[in-house]
Image: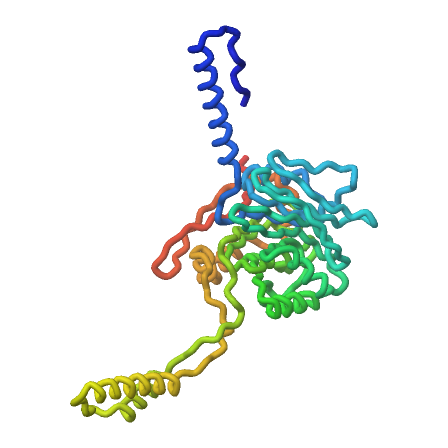
Length: 387
């Protein structure tokens, strides 16, 4: 906003009014700037392996309005443009041969700066988010080609940029821990690396990859978190790539608990038995010295009983502080999958998406009963247009 020009008149009243208006405009500009600063507790991320079909993505972004957009297989050449209003784009184009490429688009309201991570196992684009309260998070959009073996040192390097890290994209890695079916080599490597480094993998319950010429489906698109323990993921049946876009909601204030903690566990039956044997029922206390001596013996017996009945145990189980939405979704996994299978045939996903103009989409709202709770799940369904 522009300030009001100073009046030509020498009138003190007009000068005072002008100064008041300018002061008000300065305060208003400050309020507007502060309102655009990212100050949320969660980070909304949309990730999509576009397969080179980026033109239709603009409308999807306008509807979802995520804080961060991670793209894989952009298929862009250095001369191609990638611009979405209100976002700053960073990209890594594949220049050796056709295909590949990654990009990261960040909302202009988020303070950030781009970073570089050298890798031959992954195609990646990275940035560091400079969030309020010194909450700095590195975020990376990665694409792992389906052939070849992941280098674990390069995988570790993706998480070495900051104390908190988010690495999201198409890993082309399968494992029963997050996908239906058998694991492949890279899936086993990632699974072991997550366990060895106290990381968290967040993947949707629904498949994300639907090959055009094969009836199987799998989950290849997920996020791995460092020192962040809470979030939610949803595979969205939209857009015409053979990969669904995936929406992530990451609780950036939920730190990951220590992977191993020593906990003292007391056996109270042993404690009571030791107390019963060591402390007499009616001690002699006729003098002050005898009272002091009884107190010392009582304290010593209590301490001894606690030490004899207590053992130190190494606790390796992480405390569950998942959000209510994620827990509800996990508890209802079987019900959601059964309903999804009735509405949706996986191997026809690409055919339906590519013939979008010949179909009309309606929003079908389903009510699912999970124990004593009722909640709604929205599913996109395609039907033939009425003549």
